[in-house]
Length: 119
Image 1 (tube, helix red, strand yellow):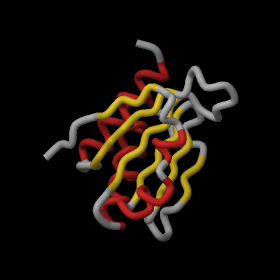
Image 2 (cartoon, one colour; image 1 turned 90 degrees about the vertical axis):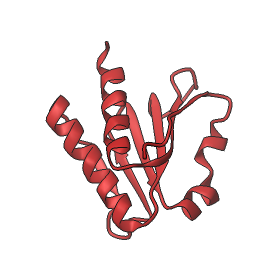
Image 3 (tube, helix red, strand yellow; image 1 turned 90 degrees about the horizontal axis):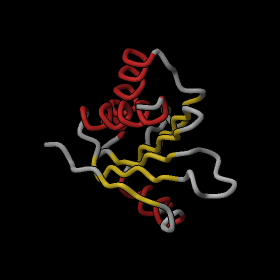
Image 4 (cartoon, helix red, strand yellow; image 1 turned 180 degrees about the vertical axis):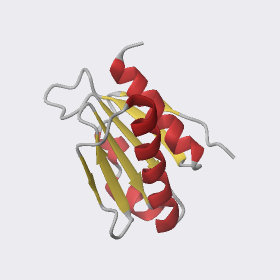
């Protein structure tokens, strides 16, 4: 398994561990000029869960792969947290923010993999 796929799998695992909802991975590898290879998008019910989701990703990737994000933005308000791992960008939204920005729709011509919600 290559390093990018391992990172993607670990990010997904971290989001599922804290019950991130409506989780998708957008494959941007064939999109000319894309700023990353994958975009992972999910949502949390409230700012506390959004913070927990980002903490879970940080902890799991750091522990299992010894990597830290290049940057993390949005933790102050926890309405939309972005985590930049270089090849993968993670977006964790409040439902209203996600509906407003509709990132998946911007990349709808890309391969989008949906992951089941974990209860």
